[in-house]
Image (cartoon, rainbow, N blue to C red; front, side):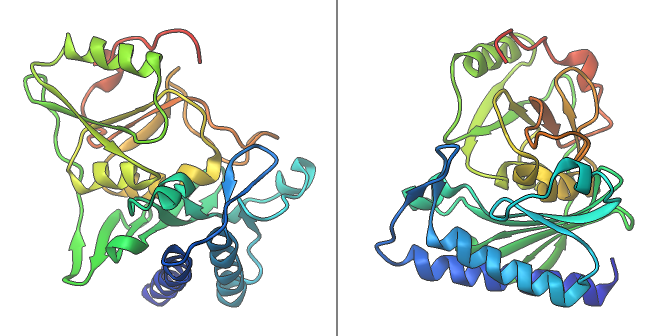
Length: 274
């Protein structure tokens, strides 16, 4: 992605974030979608801004957004490159007003994220990840900083990020099994795709997701994390792919800050139930 296009995408994400914050500061209504997930006017306002911005930037690239009606798989399976967008990830965090919600734009090429932008409107932070250039950056009021996931060692403290809104017995059991393998295991609850960005920043080591997510939930942050030297893969060891099947649901997965560490050999088996 060239510098001008990157800057345009950052500006689109910031504009969407500003629209979200306008709603955030009001006594907004919450609707329920067909899948029982919450929907606010902030989701829709951000979607419109992003859709218009991407059409102006690259109108020939298809757009798939959580808040748009998806074409059939027969149609979208023909896409080799497309935008995958979650205008507001972490709507529950938005409703709870804890600031841990994000704006997400990913560019998918042949079923893999190659570029991602993740905005955190309440923190005035934008993360970018460019796989072609191997560049992961944090953009904030202090400027632009390079990011790199921190190195992991067998005898080091393991810092796990976990969902603030989704957990359950299987996750608790899995965290207990990790505590038997590492000298110290600490847990940081975080909402939305921000979890993967925290890994990319070098503030945590592992995110085990033992529960459902959709492709648009993680694609942009997946790109950021990989560009920072991390990785994401399904718990069965297979690669996470986008637009490779009719369903938008992801398999359960691991996200890690240090892709060079032998996680697959070290991590305990995931308990049944997924």
